Image 1 (spheres, helix red, strand yellow):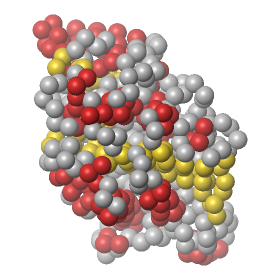
Image 2 (cartoon, rainbow, N blue to C red; image 1 turned 180 degrees about the horizontal axis):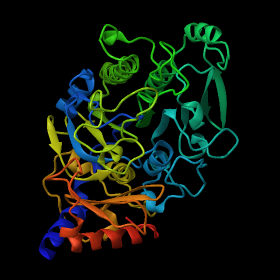
Image 3 (cartoon, one colour; image 1 turned 180 degrees about the vertical axis):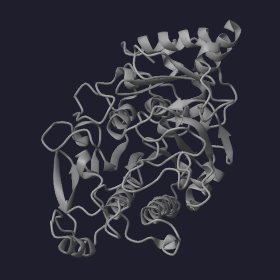
Image 4 (cartoon, rainbow, N blue to C red; image 1 turned 60 degrees about the vertical axis):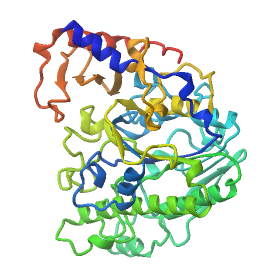
Length: 465
């Protein structure tokens, strides 16, 4: 048993030789796409059979697919905070969706890239600072942001305005034709639903593409925090269900419940935007100079009438959004960078959203990161073979997540889950039981002890990289 633990630790505590740094390549552009509530099983190349995602599937063929990548959290706001700061949930002030404003001490990956001479932009859901709070993206490394600052507004796809932040201020930009909701008369409400004409996703996508055009002659970082396919629980434009989308498109004649037509249309709409992005980079001769990453902020939702089982949105995984079982936190991850990432590759090594900042640092040759929990997965993306065991501390490479009182940790193929610190650990062998159906904690007391001790230590100060 101890021999297994030693081997597992050797696999998980990985360090990469400095010679593998992406800084060998002259400051590539980075585009990072963060879908909202997209499940592990919602993408064709991750097993989806009913929803069409041809552009993401092609992206996987052209690049690499990571099959054991974990979101920062199982819900939105803390998941973004983990991504931005490179610290897991044990080192964050929140692990649920309660309000949080980004603090001056929260060093972000955008600040890192700005220090390296990058133009920094983003669109979509920010969720970590409303106007006047000091938490706006322009105070945390972004030259430009267009989208939603307040989390509660971010799930309305036909709002009356979005925020555009540039320089030292954020201003409202009105969305033509959209009107305020809230009518008590159902007929009036339907009339207003039909009258709203400006889809927020399209506005944010145009702003993102304009950012690329403006900065095509210099290195840039662009985060696309598109809100598809998150539900609007107040009712959508097409039928009043939560899947808010201009049309059902190819799914309009399917014999499916209305919310499922809408959900599928939202995922395919998102996929088409990925295709438009790659086409623009090709048009500007930037494809070979740009690393594109695609993933999701947490597992699939069960909101707005959508049933996670209808499309098997969590694939073979147990649980969904708001769960620390695999279905709530393991998400699809695809990366492409022509000429650098070997096409058609795949890896099951475990990485996390809190590793993204360290990966950016590796990409740019940065060596003076603040304390964080991350480890660069750039060598893995580039197909390097010199990955070797290192002497990282345990809380660097045991994957950690939490939500309210729930906690989860992964060590190699072993996954521990517990409801609260005073509750016993469940233990699952993900290699043999990816659906987490067979609790083997009683058979593996030494591993349970390692996981329990790690969870107790996980809330202490993070280690320097």
